[in-house]
Structures are given as structure tokens and as C-alpha cells.
Amino acid sequence: DGPMMCEFCWNCSPQFYAFTSERLKLRWTDSFLLIFPGMMHLKPSCIVTLLVFGTFVCTTAGPLHAQCKVEWLFGVPCRNVYVALVTQIKMWRTEAGCAQGGEKCLYKLESANVHFIKAKHTTPVKKYVDDLSFRLVPYELNTHCHVSALSVSEAWYAIIDYGTNYCNLFNLIEGSGLTNVADYKEMTNDFICTQHSSANCTVY
Image 1 (cartoon, helix red, strand yellow):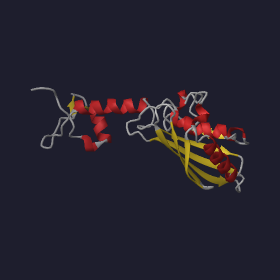
Image 2 (cartoon, one colour; image 1 turned 90 degrees about the vertical axis):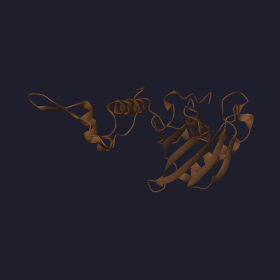
Image 3 (cartoon, helix red, strand yellow; image 1 turned 45 degrees about the horizontal axis):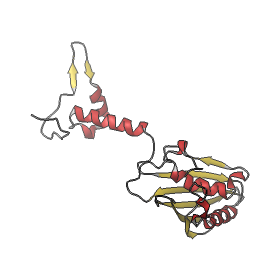
Image 4 (cartoon, one colour; image 1 turned 120 degrees about the vertical axis):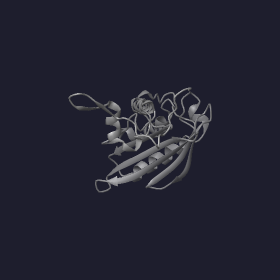
């Protein structure tokens, strides 16, 4: 015998229906199989396992790899945003910014133009490297700027980051003074930004 394994049954027809004297009733697993017919050859125990795993993934909301996506709106032209971000990245290129703690240092500008900025950030203690990008799109007749920002941990095994990837981005926005411009708005959540709701950007 031994433990039951999750395997396919190619030559058998599982009994998915339970007959009663009055009517035909579907088991709960059958309802699942009607929605996902490609899984009809899986053993019921395996279906339960998949459902539990799916529930776990959904309820532990967040990217499967440590990263953060943020959308920002600014009531100033994209050129102003571009200059502010590039200036701040260059200002925080050395470890001096972290002398009093935090991680507002060791940013490196990779490439930049008024439409797209690429940079890296290295954590001062453990030297983890994250890849940053900012896509700038003008709107309202070029008087406003929509920024799509992304920070991704280079470490392939990184799942949680204590909000570091969010802080990589936000620290630049705040440090450059962009949080104070007219019509400022930030849009993100824990589903697209690892541990955003618990991020402490005075530490990270």
C-alpha cells in the first residue's frame, strides 16, 4: 500500500455521481471538476490539496517574488519629475546618506531620459541589490505626470522583504520633494507590492 500519491488515472472512470432515490446530487469535488474539466483524472485527495494550496496563495496576498509596483500621479510636468528623481538618485549614490541609519544611500543610476529611468539600490548592511525602474507618461496636456514604478529584488530566493522594495521607490519620491507637489496621489497594495502595508521607510 503506502501513502496515496497525486497521480493521473488514464484508464479508469471515477464515480463522480452519488445517486439517491430522489435525485442526482453532485459531490463538491464534482462541482470543481465541472469548472475545471482538465482535472477530472486527479484523485479527490489531490483536488483537495490543490484547493487548499490555492486558498493559501490567495489569503497570503502578495507577489511570489519580492518586488513592488507603484503608480504615482503628480500635478507637474514629467520633466520636473524626471529632474527631481535623477537628482535624488545621484545625491544618494554613496553610503553617507545611511550614516544615521536607514537605507537612503547606495543608489546607482543606470540610464535615464524624460520617459524612463533605470537604477539599482544596494542595501547598506547585507548588500542585497534591487532593480528599479520609473516609466513617466504625461497627461492633461503635459501639465501632469503619471509614473509607473517597479522595484524587484535580484536575489532569486527573496519572497518577503519587510517593505524594502516599496521603500526603495518611496524614499526617492519623498526625498526629492515630489510628495508635496499638487495633485499628488499614490496607488499600490499588498497584492502588487510585497509587505507594503507594514513597510517602515525610516528603517529600510
